[in-house]
Length: 330
Ligand code: TRP
Ligand code: SF4
Image 1 (tube, rainbow, N blue to C red):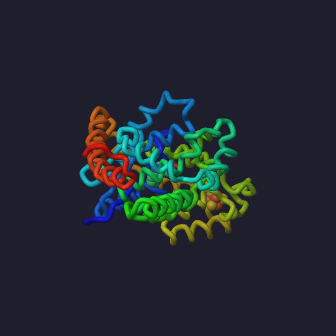
Image 2: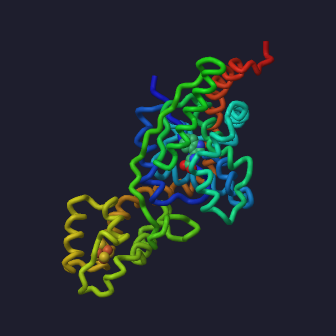
Image 3: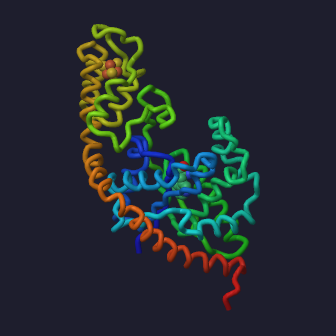
């Protein structure tokens, strides 16, 4: 029996390099050794995007194309849409009965996001419940392993606490899941700010090699290096931060040296980076083009994953209803 994995992504737009190295590559790598469920968590998207829902369906299709292009394989993993598996919602409402509000209020992302997204009114019930819905996503599969980045650790910890409380109240029902941390080298956007589609500073998995060259050329460098003949400082250069992630260590050391001695200019330095980025993304870009041509199959792929997810979660929910004595079928 393979151990079960659940992870989710919010359909808020096309995926970028940060998603690839922070999550997707790891998800792909887990497909053989684990029984993987990967959810497009559209309800989670609504917790912050409730006022702008026009793109939701399109975003679900786009994220699926990105997933397939990056190597998620519906023959190996179950790809599902959260809102099409109502058991996620049923478990969420049952867990809400036993979850003290302060547990949710003290999750760091709750207050942080309200400050960061101050243009949105996040004083909603749904937003407070974000991590509990995530707990339901995980527990409704009895997943033991949750591959996520550092920023999600508090949510997995809450999931463990809720599972423990449930088990204590109603008897052993859920395993306590653990986060499988994806090492996430912090990748900033092209302009050195956080990589985000609202800043228009991302390299997308769907970008062509020419687009990647163009974007790389526009990256900001060491601001003190105003002229080719002035030596640079890679420690303060966003381009070099990318080299640390995408360029083999030995070559990166060479670049460091070349920059500091002014033997290497920024144009060439960026050219090397662009080459490495393209080498990484070109297979994904090409695979995406072939999937785009089969765009009409995407919903069928998701529907078949979702239907498997409904069966699996129904088994768990039977036990949950039984444990809480919310059952009327006998
Ligand atoms: N909160 C996660 C994120 O923003 C997405 C998510 C929702 C998730 N449900 C999940 C991740 C369950 C892991 C498991 O990245
Ligand atoms: Fe940055 Fe490369 Fe220019 Fe040095 S040579 S400042 S590392 S872009």
